[in-house]
Amino acid sequence: IEWEGTVERVSWHLSYIFLFDSRLIEIRRVETGCLVQIISGNDMRWIWDGRGANHSQAALEGSRDEIVSREPGVH
Picture 1: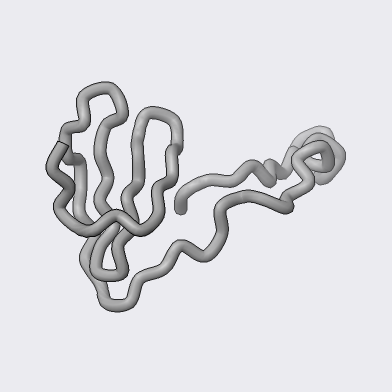
Picture 2: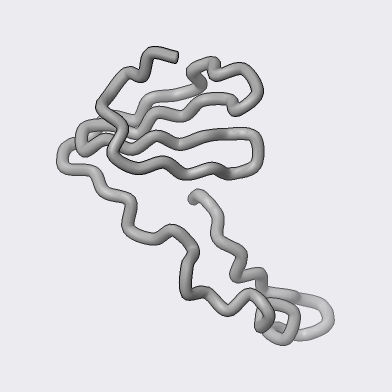
């Protein structure tokens, strides 16, 4: 695969791979490597990768009707 930018960081979320460059975020399908989207910007950085989160607390927070998930995700 020929990347659109210079890959500085990589993240995987379900069936997508996110490639981070300070100028862009490149999103591709893991199975095929096909380009899905490029998000352009200036001096872009990955600020949190999910490490340090206490996932065992997720089921304990919220009421029975509303469970709050603290799983890392892309938003």
